[in-house]
Image (cartoon, rainbow, N blue to C red; front, side):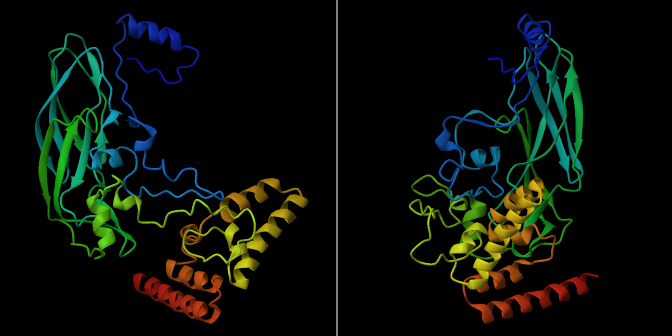
Length: 347
């Protein structure tokens, strides 16, 4: 099976060279081809409602999701055949990188793209599952063996600690795997890392389910259920009978239906600014305002503020938007003082 993607004007000539054997194809897939749309992790939540889409995959994006749950796929990430075959062997690894041999066991020369994956072992890890740490494309003549070294960069062994909200590096045992795709990994070896300081992880049932990839009776992972599901019956095409409760997933658009007066003012202010910008001819700025602010959930307000609004301050704003003005202002001020204290200690 030959997949040519968008080959352009010169595509037919290239296809003739491949089909006639003049050129040995050597491409690799940069995505996973699932067996069915229902296997895609976003299938139950896309496109969502009210111009809102939830991205629930977290670290388990693309091939990581399918491989974590060992779901059968049509073609895995990194897959690609050619008119020759390759054999891997003699893997050695350290915190600096990996070294291994590749032999062209076929009758024609060809390119191969070996890939190196790193997986933390144990369930107390928020490091990325089966992270692609490196790859290299090289030409090998038939019958020849080449030794390849792929170094690890500064991002290897790094993970985002949700408890401390910062990147850290983690000690422990890692599984190093090398092969031709995320599912074809003939070489593997355990690597013990002791060069870093042990981090503190959040200790709760939700985080344990998230890192373990637990599968329930509906064959849906716990890390895809960590957010509250949408109410499919709620369309918000008109004012709801009961005020809408504001949380991290509430968009600025939906603040108009909130209980708190400040929420209605904030949402109305964005709509008013959009109209004024369009009236004075600044349509591009107006559209950016709508797409970049009006349709964003509350959690993005903090993450896109460049540090101006911390998650603690956002908690205070959400309390204000829910009608708890004084309590919200106290939460906001307390978080603001803490942010200044942390910045001072860091500097």
